[in-house]
Every structure is written in C-alpha cells, then in structure tokens.
Length: 391
Image (tube, rainbow, N blue to C red; front, side, top):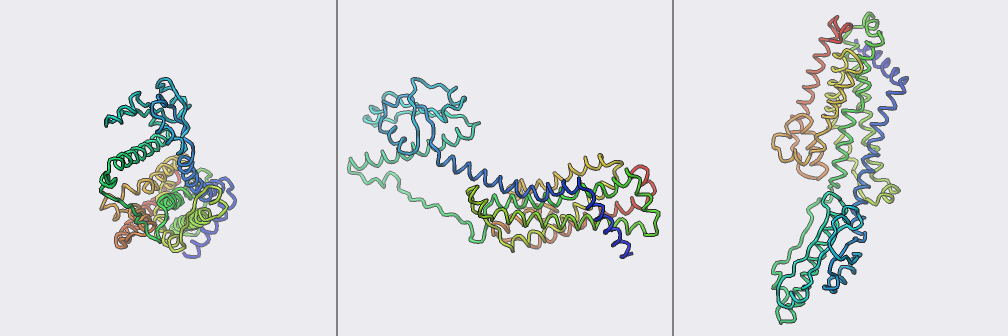
C-alpha cells in the first residue's frame, strides 16, 4: 500500500508541474505576499517619518496679535499663512493641514493673567490633517509650559513648582523581541501560506478529476482507494509545507535585506530560531488546512463550487493574525485550534512567556480536526456517489 501511495504522490506532483496556471497562482500567494507585507511595513514607517519631519501647512487668523507664538511655531517647521477669517473649506480642499485662530486680546489676556482661547480646526478623517493637529497640540503645549516657566522666574518662583512630577518613560521591549508590525505581518504570511497556498491544488485533486472524468478511471485500478486518498492528501500537505517554509524564508530575507531597508527606511530582523519554531508550530495548521480543503474538494460537485467554499474558509483561517491583540485579552483563546498557535507566535515574537502546554493542546485539537476531516473524505472515497454528485 505504501508503494501505491508513493505512486499517487508522484502522479500528483507531475500533474502539478504541468499545470502552469496553478503554479502561477501558488507562486503569487506564497512568494508575492511576503514582498507585499514587507513593502507595507516600509510604507507605514515612511509615512510616519514623513509626517514627523514635514513642514505643517497652517492657516492663521490673528497672527499679528500673537507674534511671539507665531515665531515659535515657525522655528519648529510650521509654515504660517495669514487669513482674515476661519474657512474650513480650505482644510477640506487640502490647502492647509490645520487652521489656527488667535484672539485679538491675546497679549492683554496674558498681561491680566487670563487664559486666552486659541482655536484649532482640522479634519479628523484626513490622516495628514489629524497628525498635524496632534503635532500642533504638542507644540502649543510646549510653548505654554515655557511661557509658564518664564513667568514664574520673573516672579521669583521656582519653575519646578509648576510641574512637581518628573516622568521618565522607558520601553520594556526585550532585547530579543522584534517589532510588533514585523511579527504580526510574519504571522499573517505563515497563516496565509497555510490556508491559501494550496487550495487550488486541493480543489483540483478531486473536483478537477471529476470534471475531467478521470477520477472513476483511476479508481478502477488495482490500487486501493485509501491509497489514492492518502496519496493525494499527502502530496497537498507536502506542497503546502514547502510553500510555507519558502514564504517564511522569503519574508526573513526581505525584511533584513539592506537595499530594501535603505529604500524603505526601516530596520528589522527575525532570528533563525524564531522562524524555525514558527514553522514547526504551523505544521499542524497545514495538515488541518489541507484536510479541510481536500474534504471540500471531495464533496463539491464542481471546481467552481469547491473554490467558492475553500476561498471563503481560507480567508477565515488567517484572520486570527489580524486580531492578535484582541485574542490576547481572551484567556481561553490559547487553548483553541489556530488561535493558540497565533498567540504562541505573537508571544514568541515579543519575547514573552509562552504557555507551551496550551500550544500543545491547541496543536492536538488542530490535528484532531484534521483527522475528522479525513474521516469524512475516507467515507466519501468509499461511496459510489463520489463519481456522480461529489457526495
């Protein structure tokens, strides 16, 4: 029987090598997505850096009433344009990032120890405007603190009394930890490789054979049907494992490539230990995903029907990586299939303590689901209705 399984695996791999359309689709998912994710990291970081360094375009009403504060803003990369009145449409038209309104009695209010009211208009829907408003808020707060210090000194008061607390913020990021964005996108790459990398092959292995009217002929050979079933499934699992490993390696090489880091202005790395452990943790997911897709391909009446169900379930399969921060707040999630592996990868990437018992339980439950799916496939392969209706 083992020889028959080997023959079936060889036959499936040869058919895959001849199917250029499926190979292109798999290459696009397994090889293209790591590049897309790495570029996404770079774009996000470059946008943040650009917003931090760029000159903020501000329309100002009443700048002549508060020359000192306007000079301070100009010294901090703020381009001020005088306006006669507040026109919010100028923000909507993106002529200005924000509009600042200074009252006419600004100087008089300060002299009388009153608090002048300053208006700041921005568009919270537009990212640049929202970021510029936050930056302006920090600058105005800095100006306000400096003004308070100067006024205290002139009156012989220790400026430290205005801020009795000295807060020193320190990051607790471990030396071995990696950036959260890199870890989350690495998890998305692995889970996408698990659930999306082989669904074309899984669908075509049975549903495609039925449409081409070759499945019944194969079943009439001397090889047992169980050998056909296991051979087809193992070929899908092997291709999926290789594809997942290739995606992990490509992501690591891309995120650490110096030319790409210089181009995108980012610096990140993933250790070989983390990549290796991540691939091993995801192996049960590969087996479950291929079993689920193989079951759908077996029970479906056509390739289109199988593709519809498989693509939908595959998308749901790698969603946990997108909501990893929410899963951390769910104490029982670490014991559940797929969710447990996702949380383990996240904690490994952040160099936090990992509950390996929960990971083993989640992996065992994942393999149990794979076995249940294959039991359904086994019954379908030994049912003559397989050739007529896919059930």
